Length: 109
Length: 113
Image 1 (cartoon, rainbow over the protein chains, first blue to last red):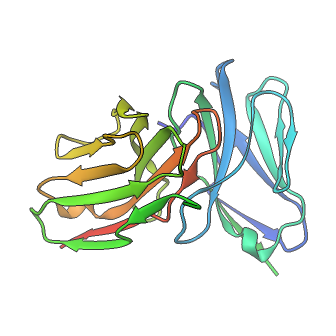
Image 2 (tube, rainbow over the protein chains, first blue to last red):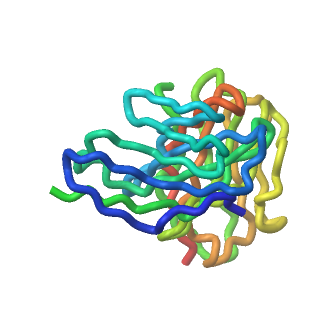
């Protein structure tokens, strides 16, 4: 059972920032927030993860609220190749990754 | 290898037959996961290996499904008496440790006719 809630779909204009929300109100203190994405017909691809501090890498930024009950994945300059299903996953180190339905992001020219 | 390799990429089998799906993880990765994904849905967890042992097989839907990883590297997912409802993409992933990122293969598309 997924512990996260995500909107089923979102649109974003090419070149703009894409902000993908995720609610995880029942997150435990030892659980991390992970983001993966899945481009059509490919396996999921890791994007970023964090515990409580904001994180940034070459792909995206992860903003986690102070109470850790929600987070936002930010793609700073979305391109057409960022069109994919984005999955927010909450997991502890001794647990497995359970995927929900994700958010289908469509980047439009 | 450079990534997680799954073979075959496509498999068509008749209802009632036995199938084996193979996963070659990234060299040195101790954690290995199997998922299956139906059209329009997120990946569904099946089983997790840490080394040679199945640390969590709670996602296997029934006793027709079984997976092994005898030497802590290659894993085989085995499905007996296949049913049409088993048709899906079966995904394998590996990671160095549980907390690190998991790398997924391209999947095996299983079609039971």
